[in-house]
Length: 242
Image (cartoon, rainbow, N blue to C red; front, side, top):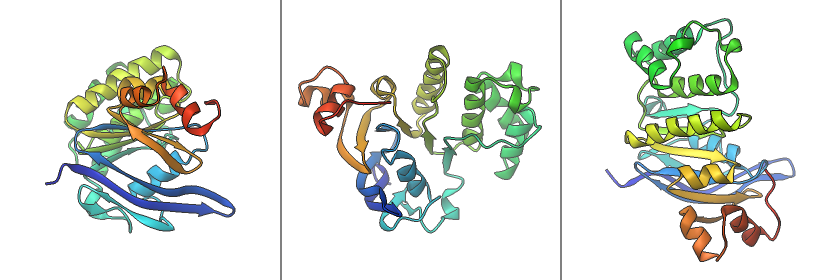
Protein backbone atom coordinates (compact mmCIF):
# COMPACT_ATOMS: atom_id res chain seq x y z
CA UNK A 1 0.00 0.00 0.00
CA UNK A 2 1.29 3.44 -0.89
CA UNK A 3 1.47 6.30 1.60
CA UNK A 4 -1.17 8.21 -0.38
CA UNK A 5 -4.86 7.91 0.52
CA UNK A 6 -6.16 10.43 -2.05
CA UNK A 7 -4.72 11.57 -5.38
CA UNK A 8 -6.51 14.38 -7.21
CA UNK A 9 -5.32 15.50 -10.64
CA UNK A 10 -6.61 18.37 -12.75
CA UNK A 11 -10.23 18.48 -11.61
CA UNK A 12 -12.48 20.92 -13.44
CA UNK A 13 -16.21 21.53 -13.17
CA UNK A 14 -18.26 24.29 -14.80
CA UNK A 15 -21.88 25.30 -14.22
CA UNK A 16 -22.98 27.62 -17.02
CA UNK A 17 -20.66 30.63 -16.93
CA UNK A 18 -19.22 29.69 -13.53
CA UNK A 19 -15.99 27.73 -13.32
CA UNK A 20 -16.62 26.14 -9.92
CA UNK A 21 -13.48 23.99 -9.92
CA UNK A 22 -10.52 25.06 -12.02
CA UNK A 23 -7.63 22.61 -12.31
CA UNK A 24 -7.49 21.31 -8.72
CA UNK A 25 -4.68 18.85 -7.88
CA UNK A 26 -3.42 17.60 -4.50
CA UNK A 27 -2.56 14.49 -2.50
CA UNK A 28 -3.55 13.39 1.01
CA UNK A 29 -1.47 10.92 3.01
CA UNK A 30 -2.86 8.01 5.00
CA UNK A 31 -3.72 9.13 8.54
CA UNK A 32 -3.50 12.82 7.67
CA UNK A 33 -5.99 15.47 8.80
CA UNK A 34 -6.25 17.55 5.62
CA UNK A 35 -8.18 20.79 5.32
CA UNK A 36 -9.57 22.53 2.26
CA UNK A 37 -9.85 26.12 3.40
CA UNK A 38 -11.57 29.04 1.75
CA UNK A 39 -14.54 31.41 1.86
CA UNK A 40 -18.06 30.47 0.80
CA UNK A 41 -18.17 30.03 -2.97
CA UNK A 42 -14.51 29.04 -3.25
CA UNK A 43 -15.39 25.65 -4.79
CA UNK A 44 -14.71 23.51 -1.71
CA UNK A 45 -17.98 21.56 -1.66
CA UNK A 46 -17.99 20.88 -5.40
CA UNK A 47 -14.40 19.65 -5.18
CA UNK A 48 -15.29 17.35 -2.30
CA UNK A 49 -18.38 15.98 -4.05
CA UNK A 50 -16.32 15.13 -7.15
CA UNK A 51 -13.67 13.40 -5.03
CA UNK A 52 -16.34 11.42 -3.18
CA UNK A 53 -17.85 10.24 -6.47
CA UNK A 54 -21.08 12.21 -6.07
CA UNK A 55 -20.46 14.44 -9.10
CA UNK A 56 -18.84 13.76 -12.44
CA UNK A 57 -15.89 16.05 -13.25
CA UNK A 58 -15.68 17.78 -16.62
CA UNK A 59 -11.97 16.99 -16.55
CA UNK A 60 -9.50 15.31 -14.24
CA UNK A 61 -9.45 12.30 -11.94
CA UNK A 62 -9.65 11.42 -8.27
CA UNK A 63 -8.39 8.19 -6.72
CA UNK A 64 -9.32 7.11 -3.20
CA UNK A 65 -7.40 4.29 -1.52
CA UNK A 66 -6.10 3.23 -4.93
CA UNK A 67 -9.53 3.20 -6.59
CA UNK A 68 -11.06 5.65 -9.08
CA UNK A 69 -14.00 7.45 -7.43
CA UNK A 70 -15.84 8.08 -10.72
CA UNK A 71 -17.84 6.42 -12.17
CA UNK A 72 -19.46 5.81 -8.76
CA UNK A 73 -17.38 2.99 -7.34
CA UNK A 74 -19.18 0.38 -5.19
CA UNK A 75 -15.80 -0.95 -4.00
CA UNK A 76 -15.30 2.30 -2.07
CA UNK A 77 -18.68 2.52 -0.33
CA UNK A 78 -17.64 0.54 2.74
CA UNK A 79 -14.23 2.22 2.94
CA UNK A 80 -15.27 5.87 3.03
CA UNK A 81 -17.57 7.89 5.27
CA UNK A 82 -19.25 11.08 4.07
CA UNK A 83 -20.81 13.82 6.19
CA UNK A 84 -22.58 16.24 3.88
CA UNK A 85 -22.94 19.97 4.49
CA UNK A 86 -26.71 19.53 4.93
CA UNK A 87 -27.55 16.64 7.26
CA UNK A 88 -29.89 14.12 5.62
CA UNK A 89 -31.86 12.23 8.28
CA UNK A 90 -34.92 10.03 8.06
CA UNK A 91 -37.96 11.91 9.32
CA UNK A 92 -39.62 11.11 12.64
CA UNK A 93 -36.83 8.78 13.84
CA UNK A 94 -34.96 9.09 17.11
CA UNK A 95 -31.17 9.42 17.20
CA UNK A 96 -30.83 5.70 18.00
CA UNK A 97 -33.25 4.72 15.23
CA UNK A 98 -31.36 6.95 12.78
CA UNK A 99 -27.96 5.37 13.40
CA UNK A 100 -29.40 1.84 13.50
CA UNK A 101 -30.97 2.48 10.10
CA UNK A 102 -27.63 3.67 8.67
CA UNK A 103 -25.89 0.68 10.26
CA UNK A 104 -28.32 -1.76 8.66
CA UNK A 105 -27.51 -0.36 5.22
CA UNK A 106 -23.91 -1.54 5.72
CA UNK A 107 -24.76 -4.79 7.50
CA UNK A 108 -23.34 -3.41 10.75
CA UNK A 109 -24.70 -4.91 14.00
CA UNK A 110 -26.80 -2.84 16.38
CA UNK A 111 -24.24 -2.93 19.19
CA UNK A 112 -21.74 -1.14 16.95
CA UNK A 113 -24.38 1.55 16.26
CA UNK A 114 -25.02 1.98 19.97
CA UNK A 115 -21.28 2.23 20.65
CA UNK A 116 -21.01 4.94 18.00
CA UNK A 117 -23.73 6.97 19.71
CA UNK A 118 -21.69 6.76 22.92
CA UNK A 119 -18.51 7.79 21.08
CA UNK A 120 -20.13 11.03 19.90
CA UNK A 121 -21.68 11.74 23.29
CA UNK A 122 -25.33 11.20 22.38
CA UNK A 123 -26.31 8.34 24.69
CA UNK A 124 -28.58 10.63 26.68
CA UNK A 125 -30.27 11.79 23.45
CA UNK A 126 -30.77 8.32 21.94
CA UNK A 127 -34.56 8.57 22.22
CA UNK A 128 -34.77 12.15 20.90
CA UNK A 129 -36.09 12.78 17.39
CA UNK A 130 -33.64 14.42 14.98
CA UNK A 131 -35.74 17.60 14.69
CA UNK A 132 -35.50 18.08 18.48
CA UNK A 133 -31.69 17.90 18.59
CA UNK A 134 -29.60 21.07 18.87
CA UNK A 135 -27.36 22.06 15.97
CA UNK A 136 -24.28 20.58 17.62
CA UNK A 137 -26.09 17.36 18.53
CA UNK A 138 -27.40 16.97 14.97
CA UNK A 139 -23.87 17.40 13.60
CA UNK A 140 -22.57 14.78 16.04
CA UNK A 141 -25.30 12.38 14.91
CA UNK A 142 -24.47 13.07 11.27
CA UNK A 143 -20.80 12.27 11.93
CA UNK A 144 -21.76 9.13 13.86
CA UNK A 145 -23.80 7.93 10.88
CA UNK A 146 -20.80 8.56 8.60
CA UNK A 147 -18.55 6.51 10.93
CA UNK A 148 -20.84 3.64 11.90
CA UNK A 149 -19.34 1.26 9.30
CA UNK A 150 -15.77 2.06 10.47
CA UNK A 151 -14.47 3.71 7.26
CA UNK A 152 -10.78 4.25 6.58
CA UNK A 153 -11.33 7.66 5.00
CA UNK A 154 -13.76 10.33 6.26
CA UNK A 155 -15.01 13.43 4.44
CA UNK A 156 -16.52 16.28 6.49
CA UNK A 157 -18.04 19.24 4.66
CA UNK A 158 -18.10 22.34 6.90
CA UNK A 159 -19.28 20.33 9.93
CA UNK A 160 -19.22 23.25 12.40
CA UNK A 161 -21.04 25.87 10.32
CA UNK A 162 -23.79 27.56 12.34
CA UNK A 163 -22.67 26.17 15.71
CA UNK A 164 -22.03 28.32 18.76
CA UNK A 165 -18.41 28.58 19.98
CA UNK A 166 -18.77 25.92 22.69
CA UNK A 167 -20.44 23.43 20.34
CA UNK A 168 -17.67 24.03 17.80
CA UNK A 169 -14.97 23.31 20.38
CA UNK A 170 -16.78 20.15 21.50
CA UNK A 171 -16.96 18.98 17.90
CA UNK A 172 -13.25 19.71 17.42
CA UNK A 173 -12.50 17.26 20.26
CA UNK A 174 -14.54 14.60 18.47
CA UNK A 175 -12.77 15.25 15.15
CA UNK A 176 -9.36 14.94 16.82
CA UNK A 177 -10.47 11.58 18.25
CA UNK A 178 -11.60 10.35 14.84
CA UNK A 179 -8.20 11.19 13.36
CA UNK A 180 -6.21 9.82 16.32
CA UNK A 181 -7.82 6.41 15.74
CA UNK A 182 -5.90 6.20 12.45
CA UNK A 183 -8.51 7.46 10.01
CA UNK A 184 -7.66 9.84 7.22
CA UNK A 185 -9.85 12.94 7.54
CA UNK A 186 -10.59 15.54 4.87
CA UNK A 187 -12.34 18.65 6.14
CA UNK A 188 -13.69 21.66 4.28
CA UNK A 189 -14.08 24.80 6.34
CA UNK A 190 -14.32 28.56 6.03
CA UNK A 191 -13.11 29.04 9.61
CA UNK A 192 -9.41 29.91 9.70
CA UNK A 193 -9.02 29.09 13.40
CA UNK A 194 -10.55 25.66 12.84
CA UNK A 195 -8.08 24.83 10.07
CA UNK A 196 -5.14 26.09 12.11
CA UNK A 197 -6.09 24.03 15.17
CA UNK A 198 -7.16 20.76 13.53
CA UNK A 199 -5.31 20.26 10.27
CA UNK A 200 -1.90 18.73 9.57
CA UNK A 201 -1.94 20.47 6.19
CA UNK A 202 -4.31 22.85 4.45
CA UNK A 203 -5.05 23.70 0.86
CA UNK A 204 -6.01 27.37 0.59
CA UNK A 205 -8.70 27.65 -2.09
CA UNK A 206 -10.45 30.54 -3.83
CA UNK A 207 -12.33 30.97 -7.13
CA UNK A 208 -12.11 27.25 -7.87
CA UNK A 209 -8.33 27.06 -7.56
CA UNK A 210 -5.90 25.87 -4.92
CA UNK A 211 -3.53 28.73 -4.21
CA UNK A 212 -1.10 27.09 -1.78
CA UNK A 213 -0.71 23.86 0.23
CA UNK A 214 1.24 23.38 3.46
CA UNK A 215 1.00 23.12 7.20
CA UNK A 216 -0.63 26.18 8.77
CA UNK A 217 2.62 27.07 10.51
CA UNK A 218 4.60 26.60 7.30
CA UNK A 219 2.32 28.86 5.26
CA UNK A 220 2.38 31.56 7.95
CA UNK A 221 6.18 31.41 8.15
CA UNK A 222 6.76 31.27 4.38
CA UNK A 223 4.67 34.38 3.79
CA UNK A 224 5.97 36.20 6.87
CA UNK A 225 2.51 36.83 8.35
CA UNK A 226 0.78 36.17 11.66
CA UNK A 227 -2.32 34.12 10.74
CA UNK A 228 -4.05 32.13 8.01
CA UNK A 229 -6.27 35.14 7.37
CA UNK A 230 -3.09 37.05 6.52
CA UNK A 231 -2.00 34.15 4.30
CA UNK A 232 -5.23 34.52 2.33
CA UNK A 233 -4.70 38.28 2.03
CA UNK A 234 -1.16 37.76 0.72
CA UNK A 235 -2.26 35.15 -1.82
CA UNK A 236 -5.33 36.95 -3.15
CA UNK A 237 -4.70 40.63 -2.45
CA UNK A 238 -8.03 40.94 -0.66
CA UNK A 239 -9.28 40.47 2.88
CA UNK A 240 -10.82 37.19 3.89
CA UNK A 241 -14.59 37.09 4.40
CA UNK A 242 -16.25 34.11 6.07
